[in-house]
Amino acid sequence: MSTTLKPGDAITHLLARWQDGETPASDTLARLVYDELHCIAVRNLAHNPPDGFQPTELVNEAWMRLSSRQDGFASRGHFYAVASLQMRHLLVDLARMRDSGKRSGQQVALTVRLVDPGAQPMDLAVIAEAFDELAKLDARKARAFAMTELVGLTLAETAELLDISVPTAERDLRFVRVWLAARLQRC
Image (cartoon, rainbow, N blue to C red; front, side, top):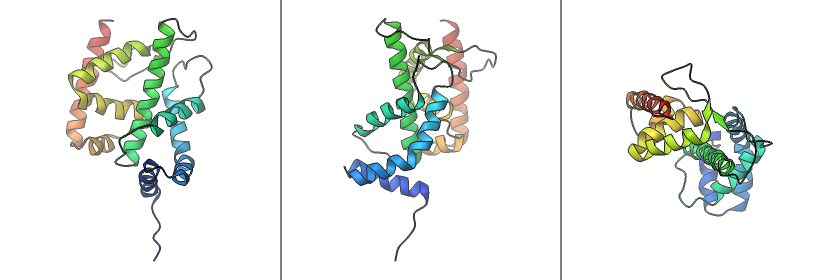
């Protein structure tokens, strides 16, 4: 008896096969997730992308990093969250290289929803530094913020992936927005 998997289940199944080294699974998975990864890349590049850097390049670079990842993905949502964070790390790396004079190009900026809705976009390297500081202080709150603000997951999806309640996720986000706003005002 043949059962048809739902798209999310199929992706989760293919992720496990991909991580077991099955080339056909990798090809099929790439076709299934490409459009969503491209949308995530477009969101990540929405504000002043690095000079000439395209969403397709960001997807390809993130895919290579994901391919070399040693630990698995618990679900489709976990995969997309990790993919988006990989894209963010790539953009931060580009911004840091630019700032160190190794790469010329436009300034990379990012708008994050903080407590002050009138806040201007900031340099990605400044936000990344503040975010790294937050991750050292409270990793769960940093992950909750990244999943909702950078990946675009809903509060319910974020709460499920972090194994916390939705009200806890809401409190985490309120804390992070206030903390980041205060931290970024010092810059």
